[in-house]
Image (cartoon, rainbow, N blue to C red; front, side):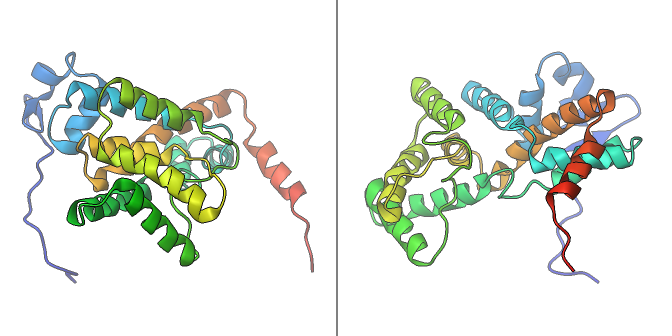
Length: 259
């Protein structure tokens, strides 16, 4: 049963022919291979265009920044899955990716939607970013919500990854209205919650991507791709020095059974 309106049966990404592979209108072996790095190629696949130098630089930077963060639940789930089925590397990677939600991997997409909405208010009302951020933060606090991109269980008072992204955005002259709003939200959150909260890496990820012209729909792809690289590293280590079953045993020990 068709649900919703069907789209045209067309893809603009790639086609394989007997003598070549064409990707986004480019000859894979004759043009792309040997010329584009993986970050540039990912951008081409994602958007259909080759990146500008700033897009390439910051996409690469964000992939590096978000890839690895220790023994996170996503990595633990992947390691335990591989321990249960050592021949299923792909299954273990999938187990880790399935755990990549806003609690574990961050709220970059939610931040992007917040910044997009706030920027619309700035433009429509010809308002100052600070005023819009205060209004939005106050509304979220009054509704009992949490403002995405703020708070971190480890990094306090600053998330060093977030600060480095903002620093490099300023250095390279690409800080735009969404980064201005991200900084305005930092002050607005402190005012609305009555205390400063750490701006975590998700807010700068969203703000720099939007300032560089990426759509909101592309933002979540960056943490997922980055964390895939980390999962593969953890699983390579798990194959050589397995700890997955030990992790499972520790979980069993940590939880008390009650009738």
